[in-house]
Length: 289
Ligand SMILES: Nc1ncnc2c1ncn2[C@@H]1O[C@H](COP(=O)(O)OP(=O)(O)OP(=O)(O)O)[C@@H](O)[C@H]1O
Image: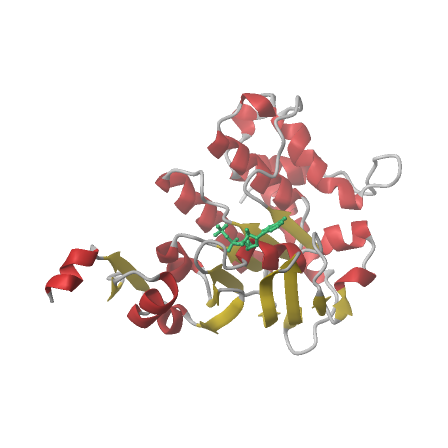
């Protein structure tokens, strides 16, 4: 590791150490959350505890309330009833910059196609650490360099953000998120527009970040094999309620697929890692049985 990399890594670790002390390892909790749009109930009595350093995957069918739950966990939406707490404090009690130093959110199209360069967008991640005049106590240049290198964005540094492909933009969004140095990240279907190579690269980068800094990750994922491979724990949401939560082995089951997703599936053990993987089966194979 070069001096610059070491300095940047120390930056990550210092950020991790600067986090508030935890009690019982719970960093974020949803307590009896209910929510609806007009008369449509979307979430009913959701209670969830997210522990420091874990990767929680939220899976469930279309319209089951996953994005709504993530919006409530990030304070983008207020629940109709119930409360979210971050480090044992109600989410509503945090000032905006204070919350941004602790929590970052990545949605499918987080970065609007503006006329900024890639590097300028990544630097925007430092906003929560800047004074009124847009300056920081410490020079974050080497840290930004390190992130650009790590996400292979150096060649694109001066390229305008609106001239990038969807996959490249998603990498820039991730770089901006890393620049923000949060202790918890919320990801809403982060790999949807990525090809298989960039899906795996994206997930590996998040996992390395998690392992290096004790980052806590909450992600909505539609790809259940990725969820099984990367998440430490999975919560299954169905029709606005938690159908179940547990390890990949406990949640990625034939019963869950039939009851929640209404599809037939065979579950096999991954030959290289100790995680279940899903093999989907056409309906007629089951009719023939
Ligand atoms: N702003 C809104 N106004 C009205 N209804 C909404 C709004 N946002 C979501 N809904 C409704 O709430 C329900 C849950 O939506 P949500 O996006 O949370 O589900 P989801 O599980 O993330 O779905 P998907 O997998 O399709 O992304 C759906 O019935 C949706 O139509």
